[in-house]
Image 1 (cartoon, rainbow, N blue to C red):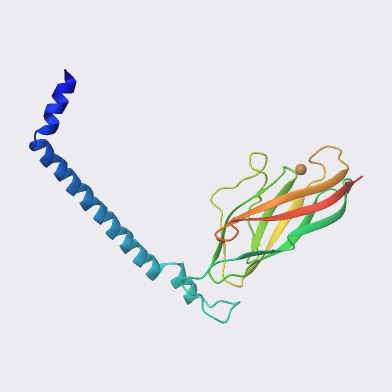
Image 2 (tube, helix red, strand yellow):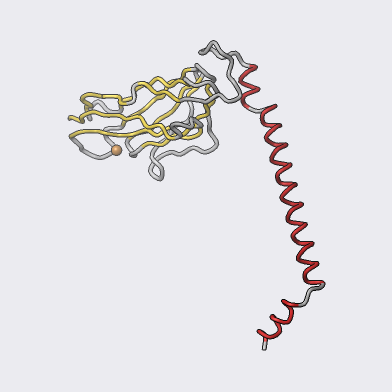
Length: 199
Ligand SMILES: [Cu+2]
């Protein structure tokens, strides 16, 4: 019964088709509006965006001014820090790694995390130490923090290892720190902490 009804309607041109056409026109108009807004937004971004602002700030590293098409690049040295022998009796150890923006646009570090509850990391930028980041779900994970490094700018990554975190432990240590940034080639850069825990 309802089948017949549907078939009947499908063959009858009229108000329904006009409505459908009007709907299509509306969809087309909405698509055009979205495209226009996107194009406008892009032009505004090119005009006011990070390229424009970093061009106003003299880049301390490169001789060429940061082009709008510049790319940030996070470099951390060393990529593996060997603690050697870590004495559990001596307690916590903190090491420093050199972080720099070797790219041609502002580097924005938005988050950090470690691979284990015994390890935490903080970034020192312009003499100011940021919050400590630990393992997701097992350590501090501050929200709303970010650090900006201009092209050529340097910072210091502090990594702290707590030998008491796993009770009495003897043996090899291999921990990682992940640095999340806008570096398109390495959005999650990993550095490692190695060593051997002894009494
Ligand atoms: Cu651990």
